Length: 394
Image (tube, rainbow, N blue to C red; front, side, top):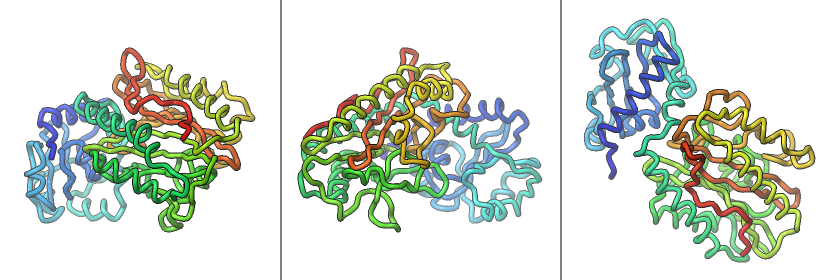
């Protein structure tokens, strides 16, 4: 088990408190309860509350499992508790206002906590957390590059070796998942969006890749069933001259990359290759703009303004369910801040990481396009998932 070094955890906490000072100048106390943010700051995912107070050392109060937290974490201040009441007694006066993860914390949970603190005002620390996590450290980038290498090898080498006529979407997805887990993938796909879940990603044949989505993404998936509308369908069997669409995440030590590759078993109609090539050009135009200081909303506007109305009809989704972005941040979850879309007006920073994914549906054929993960550097964008761009013919 890899333990996140204490110095790395200290840098992350210092970066967060600096962001809070800038974005929330009058902050007093921040309470972190989501397991992803707790892991980011402490290196473990135990059930508890990370209490961050201005001008004081942060303390992680753990209900379960304190002993696992001690074993896994290099965080300096871990305290065992039995209930929220113990936190209030140990911490003392935490002020009249609290900043919390409003996008995550259920109202009932907050009410149970606040019974002991009596905060008068509840504010959000979500933006400060998102911006802090969006700028990856060298430690984080090293892990993401490892994930990216496995990701590229899986989609460009392993998948072509197992695709065959008669295989089902679910069977192909299962073979991909086993291969990736045998080589380090953690096996789950984490998303930040409320009430959203995913298993590996999307493994689709033909126009199943354009099926209506339950999540905010350009690709579709019929999935296992209405109760599990993701992964791949057991009844959809691959035939000759069909499109194969694979959009999956790869996670190692908590960190993800995102990649999409399109294949054909045999030959597809000419329009599929034509529209795929246009998506490649859109990706290249987007990626060429990923530099420190560039503004995501302006990148989105500039690239989208160059796309004609006919191509836009099925670009980034189906009909009125088309999504309005070209790429998204990625890290401890697949859908991180910032997004290449309208409304994201803060300049890109060095070591932001983006998954860029222009895709276009073709009724009766399926979804073409691609996706790769890029680290923003002073020299431009570095692809870390392998840069195969054409449709791979099998």
